[in-house]
Image (cartoon, rainbow, N blue to C red; front, side, top):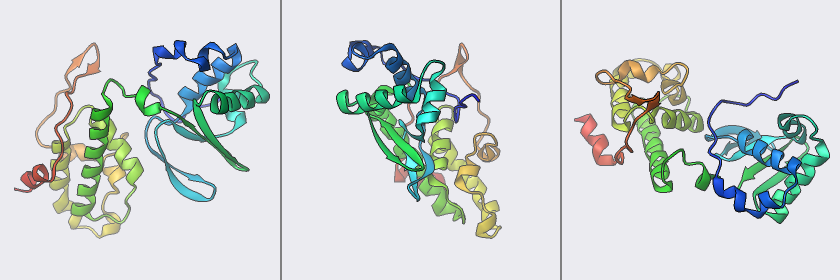
Length: 237
């Protein structure tokens, strides 16, 4: 059996890691496990169940098991190797924190936010998340759907923000509103589905046409302006 990642994506490997004790003092197998953990954790917020409760996993966190980590790490890595690496990375190097129950292990990479900004500054990344939350709240206010999958919706909005402006996605909500309000709340799109990734329903309601600017296949998008209440009011005009 081969371990399968929950989703594809790029990892930014912080070059300064080479100067850290967690790297310099670790044995080869522990280094393999360290890099494996960086690739395994969630890159976006994700809803999950932990210890009988529904929680939202932050980027840099995951619910896993020693066996999953061992399998993802490849050949010649044992359960004991994984256990020792986790203990050292937590207690000796403060690289991660972990909690364990009978049904799983919650692992969080410390300082994940600082190292994995995808080219944005911390301030810009926080603004992106704040805009996504405002857009989610705007959707709930205007559409009033029965299902309200917040974590997945915000994750999807953040993915779309690499190509589309928040104000245009908010306009799509307004364009969808007359149709949505003609249905009972149970038939109105869950925001996670309206801003879906595999089936981006919101695109049918976007203003105008969009051209993806690219350089060598990479989308170009300047950091969007803040989505203020005033800008949302302008959309209603």
